[in-house]
Amino acid sequence: MANIIDGNKISQVIRNEIKEETERFKIDTGIVPGLAVMLVGDDPASKIYVKRKENACKEVGFYSREYKLPAETDEKTVLSMIDELNRDPEIHGILVQLPLPGHIHSAHIIEAIDPAKDVDGFHPVNIGRLLTGRPCHMACTPKGIMELLDRSGIPIEGKEAVIVGRSNIVGKPLFLMLLARNATVTVCHTKTKDLAEVTRRADILVAAAGKAEMIRGEMVREGAVVIDVGINRLDDGRLVGDVAFSEASPRSSFITPVPGGVGPMTIAMLLRNTLDAARRSRKDP
Ligand code: NAD
Image (cartoon, rainbow, N blue to C red; front, side, top):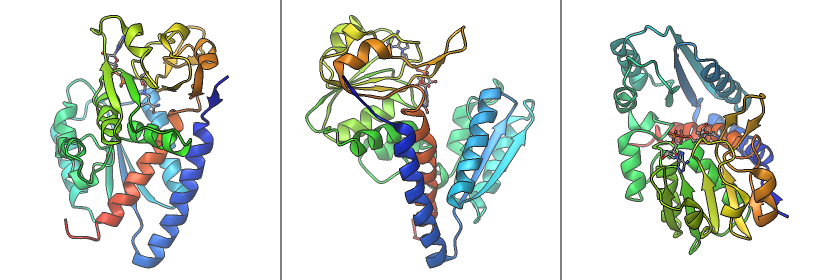
């Protein structure tokens, strides 16, 4: 039977570490790490995420500023606010909650953020630095997955890692992070032929497709580590991942539950990136 990786517990440990580091950083430098979170429109899930991020900032002693803009706000207005935040010395991290309303191009918004303040790690400069192995802000969810593996003592080097899903925010950056740690990485997507044949090769299997319980037990290799990124709401209201947990867990050595696995790590990594941004703001670029 698998060991359950407790993302709530691990993320709380990290948040406590960040809180302590922040206290010391404030005493040493007089700087309070500051995060600006921008929400355009009133998507209910986004509102919840923004609230959680704000609370997490308070908990660790950051300064946080929230901008709630109506859905009809035009792109130019958002861009000019980002420009101001880029120059604001109290703000070290800028996060624009996605998805944005259809008339705003998320690529334009992401690219307008100063890469040094891009604590989501979505700016092409940060992605390019990740690709070439240079210091950068890394996307929070895949960075959180790497922390879960490391803090659970799971070796990565030389392992076969298979990622199901190639999004810019999870699959692709995770591919780069696992590769940088010397895993042999395969990325699957909707056009992958015989998905089960590929997933069964995985020592580390990451499901990030957004398809409820699509990873069935027989797709998991005996003894594999299974990381479930998916968050899917079923018609009956239940929240499930991309992995059929009851089928996969008897075959796995480690597995993350949904909820309480990868999810809580994302905000912890956002805090980590913001503190790092505040630290780096003291140094010349
Ligand atoms: P996305 O929709 O942008 O990308 C999904 C990817 O999965 C695509 O590359 C697609 O090719 C692939 N895919 C979809 N169906 C597939 C199938 N049947 N077989 C093989 N590949 C398939 O999704 P995303 O933004 O990366 O999110 C993925 C999931 O992770 C969602 O459930 C999302 O809610 C969740 N998520 C969770 C967190 C977190 O903090 N825990 C963060 C981001 C995303």
